[in-house]
Length: 372
Ligand SMILES: *Cc1c(COP(=O)(O)O)cnc(C)c1O
Image (tube, rainbow, N blue to C red; front, side, top):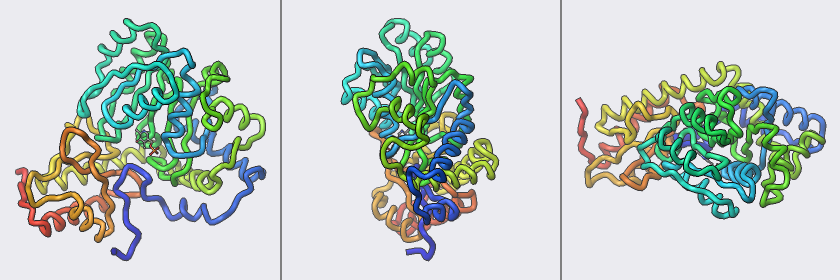
């Protein structure tokens, strides 16, 4: 093992700053004024990052990002309502599966893993089915790293008078999301991706009027976003035991986000990381799966070398021995692996990753297929 802690080249949990980890060395009373103040500050900062005005609120929720997605769908989509899921990867599919479990009517507009949804086709689907009240879009489909077209989709949904729910789990804090301007009903994210906090909580930026109207919809007690909101507004406390250390760490992570220069600077660093790893691996003959124009700077899916000497597990083990934790592929259509560009990584670290990949390929006896 390398002497330092490994770098996580994953889509989250991601590598966090020492200050963020240090924020967890203190215990907090969940009802205490000091902790309530942290919660209030975190909620206010998240609203700012989301570019959400007074018509919106931030409702944090215990658990991983999926809990926040389930809470949002179960609260905002009425029991007799219908949702449309735009799916081109695992997270879109998971949202559809969630709707099936909680007994909401839904339809899926599916495209292949390297194809964004077509706004014109979305418009036709909405025109043909007035029962669809909510549309769910995954901003960056972390399965492949593809960036889906938020603004064109939001324009179509608004023009048709429907509500857009955005799963911004892997973009929030790194790519701008103009929540108010785009008229989004809800934006869902979690602490442990581009905000560089630790895992244990998600949050939803939701239009207050929609939450108010959704009171009583939820299928679940613990995942009732409207109840969580009402209770938090009244008491300043979380409804059930909060992940106190996670909230405190997110407070510090948000300070670091602001100190770095906010979303533009964070996204700029990730884009530089992305460039360094894509250029570097291309030099080793390893190509990304998604065309550059569709690719987010968050995570890159690479095609495994087409060489019988290559196998993912020994490749992974060699990189791990050098202190780099990469991520397996999640695509159904091709043999791939993924490299995340988020967390406290820098282009210099990505350069070290590229060098380590070169050594791993040599050790496995994989022939170099240098792209000129
Ligand atoms: C990470 C992620 C989620 C939530 O996953 P969890 O494992 O529950 O945190 C949801 N949607 C997208 C697009 C994600 O990247």
